[in-house]
Length: 282
Image 1 (cartoon, rainbow, N blue to C red):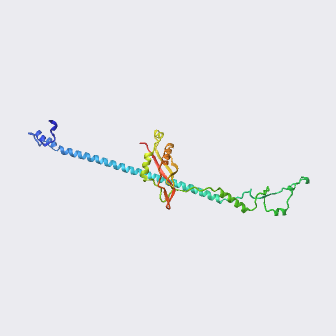
Image 2: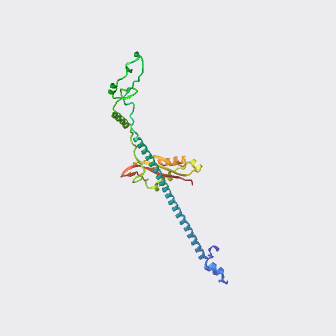
Image 3: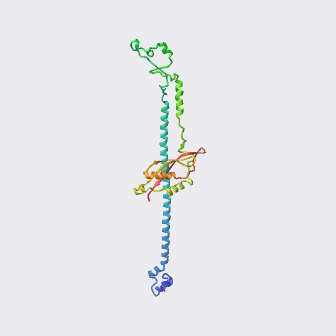
C-alpha cells in the first residue's frame, strides 16, 4: 500500500498537516519541493551540456593548432633545406668557373722535341754520328721544339694539340641526370589531400619496440622525390631523431601510394616533397 502513495502529492500533504499550523515553514518546504527538484535537475543538465560543449570545442581547436604547427614546421624545414641546396649549387658553379678560367696547359708528350747536344772534349775514336754537333743552319731548319728527347710520333702544330685535347674532353662527358625541382607551379598532392595523407600515416605507422622501451619520441623530417609519374623516388632523412624511428619513417614513405605529380609549365616534372612523421607515445 505504501508503494502506491505519492508523498509529494497535495492530498498527502494536507493529510499530514491536517489540524496543524500550515503557516509553519515545513508546510511551505513540502509544498515547493517539486519546483526545487525540477530546477535542480535542469541546472545539472545545463551544466553537463556546457562541460561537454567546452570539451569538444577545446579538442577541435587543439587539433587544428597541432595541424597548423606541423605545417609551419614542415614549411620551415623545407625553406632551410632549399637554402642549403642553393648554397651547394652556388659552390659547385664557383668551382666550375675557377676550373674553366685556369690556363690551358699543352701536354708535353704531344709536342715534338729535339735533343740538345752537350759539348764535351773526347777522343775522335769515341765520337759517334749521333753525338755530332749540329750546325746553326740545321737547327734553324728544324721546326720542332727543344727538349731532352726526340719523339717522331708527335706533332709541332699547337692547334692540332688543342683539337686533340678538346676531342678527349668531349668523349669524357657523362649524360646529365634528369632535373628534380624543389618548387613548381603545382606541387605534388596526395590523393584526397593532406587529411588523407595524415590518416594513411596513422593507420600504417609501426612504433619500433626498442624505441618504445627506451621512451624515444620525436618528429622525423623525410624528403622524397615524387616522379613525373607520381611514384616515390629517392628517399632521405633530413632531420633525424633515432635510427629505429628514421628507418620506420623511410619504410612508411616508401609504402605511400602514387601521388598526383607536380607540374611546371603544364608538364609533369620530378619534385622534392618534404613530410614530417610524428612519433609520440600515449
